[in-house]
Length: 94
Image 1 (cartoon, rainbow, N blue to C red):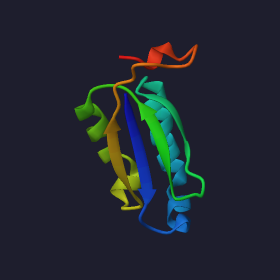
Image 2: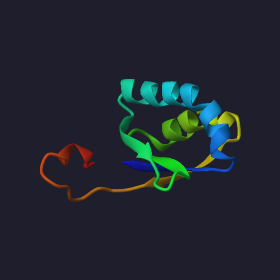
Image 3: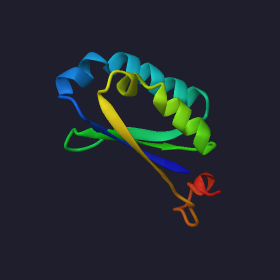
Image 4: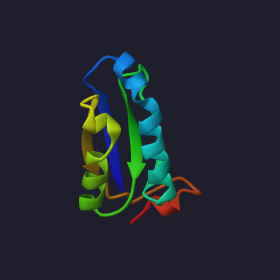
């Protein structure tokens, strides 16, 4: 599993201008089965996405995010080997 932590490098007003295409990108990530959960950071400095698939696929997909293409945000991609979960979240392992 991967944690995708995106941090805005431009003002939130710029992020707001590209939010619709970014959300289309996020929704496509869910549709493909790559994304498991996502949301905004609080305070609003970016967001976090939980994802699964091969690292190369994640990196390629992140490179196509409108926020990346427009220089709105940068991503930190962290791989996590999940070994224990709460009941109902066993699908996050492996």
